[in-house]
Amino acid sequence: MVIHYFNSFSKIENQAAALIENNNNVRDNKEEKEDINKDENFYENEKYKVLYQEIIEYFEKSKPYKNFDFNIQSLAKALQTNTSYISRAINIKNEKGFKGLLNYYRIEQVKKDFLNNHQKKYTIKHIYTDAGFSHQASFNRTFKELEGMTPNEFIKNIKRKNKL
Image 1 (cartoon, rainbow, N blue to C red):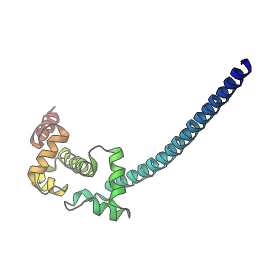
Image 2: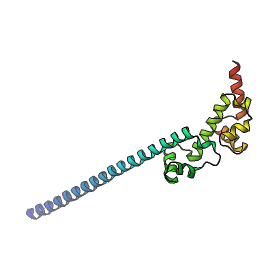
Image 3: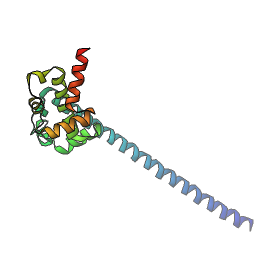
Image 4: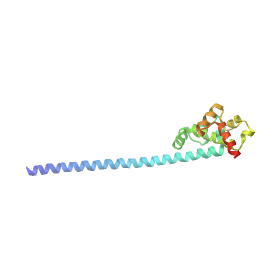
């Protein structure tokens, strides 16, 4: 009887060892797959980071945002890629997406013009249309969203600082 229990116990021990080994193999395979996914994600993220840099360089050198018809399709065509890649690259770095990036550059252009006192030479309408906005309402809304004040308040602040 002792031999029978010993044989049964050995059999159970062997089954447990086999289950543990199988579990370890499954865990190792899962870890390998996770490592492969991390490598693929790194490659994908690097690809999008490079594309994002190209987008920024294009915006800064060519100033396409000054054209009020400029859109994501125009950008994709200029950079010889597709709109999905453009969108992903921008969304990885910029939570506001293409429109947010476009508006950021447009408002920066307007602020630069205001700081250079262009509003003395030109109308505000000329300045915001030159920056790519086609409607005053969208310009005012976007300016206030990004700067926390209206364009007129911004100009008044500049004048106040210049008097000091």
